[in-house]
Image (tube, rainbow, N blue to C red):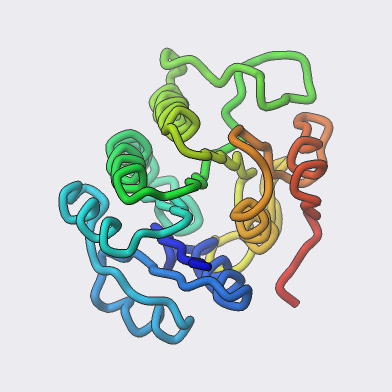
Length: 241
């Protein structure tokens, strides 16, 4: 039986943890990176490097048609380390494009390759005002929001593309990440999530759950993660060691 995964964002904070979990579970992992300098890192993790840009839609489609992954995982972001405030305005614009155009290219390539499931990273901290705890059915911030409107629109676009892809689509709305390689040693806002616990949720979602959206954050009165806990048996306290 084939057990092949194409992981976009394989060298990121979540991607590095996730790659090792998947390899340990017997998956053949193809890790996408834009940088040839990161080939050695991927090889050290026993991941097959695939050097390409998500915006090169035709090359991406061709590569996935050859690999024929069972699962495609979308962990791509374009944000500065520790969310450096001086860089965030431009980064939010880049990230919104990644969630729209980049997601479209990944979804199209996954469908074309006969992929069975696609899992995508989203965020849980842009809910619009509503009674708490927020559940996955609650509305996100409107496009008119002065700071995060474009971000929320990008998230809506990503989630719609994944859920309506025609294959099994799972969206994981992570809390703000902290832990190794994130720039934050501790939670800086309520309902954050440790990067290793987030990676574990993604690893579980490879084989469990059904098409849908799932909040993945640490317990807090502002948000409900019961759906992820009940569906995946996910534990917010899970760590590598």
